[in-house]
Length: 348
Image 1 (cartoon, rainbow, N blue to C red):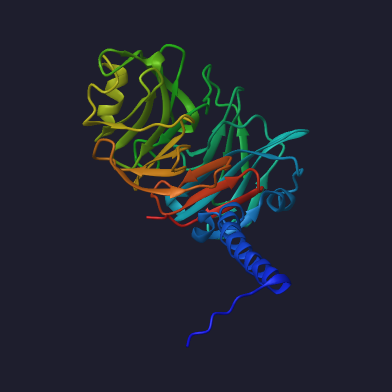
Image 2 (image 1 turned 180 degrees about the vertical axis):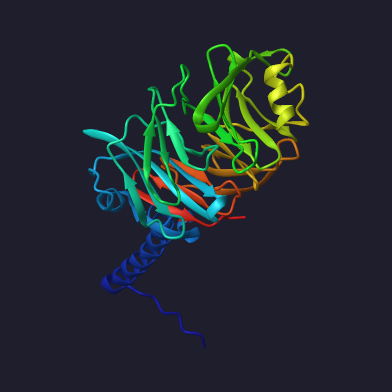
């Protein structure tokens, strides 16, 4: 005969209470693990090759703890088969600085302080120097071999202005540097020859035959050694585009002699854009940050319209800067809230 066991009185209450506590701990454990994983160990940590506190970098560079990140990017130097991470820093009570970091472990290689105004990005220029400039007459050049600094006046009425994006043809024989920026009513291409002596400026007022340049934002410009890609955002239609020119002459012709940008392009794709308007083109694809219900970095094909290849999650409250190596082999994430810079392997 089966016996029925009933818990009565105080003992019953104790068992119920114990069961409730155990269940509560299990539920709390599940929720806590999810929160813990999201807030303290975001997905990008699993991709990390190195992580450094920004304060440790600024201290090693002899800068104040208040220094903030202006730009953060990979710059390959083919002549010495080396890639630097170039960190542009601004100080509240001091001049800007550029710090070169090792691209394998984020250690400080050398810091260049007490600089005049630095641009919004840096690039390898036509003579093989790491260069940047802003709204004054000076070009900041760093020798990537000797690790020496040269600040000079190029002696032109139109000194380079690193306001948005650009590229150089180094180490090709026809050495030149190209800076591209959106202005109020057009898109401008400035071409500089040897040692940043000014060559010429071209401006174009329309895209795709009937869309005025004033409607667009320039997101990125990528040169892979042969082809040139340009990423754009039409702020009125909320559509993004990638234009591709297969040779340099096609690209420059769109500024010099064409009726509109895109007339000589070999391909024009539609791609998504985000509210932040930030995007990056690498050899691995077009990468854009989303703040939708699948917050993260979306990677899209460079040869098909609106084709998402994969997405990488970011913490819900992420704020900072993200930069990719041109060949897509690595990427950088500066987490402003945590004050850390992470060197990461690609997720694809």
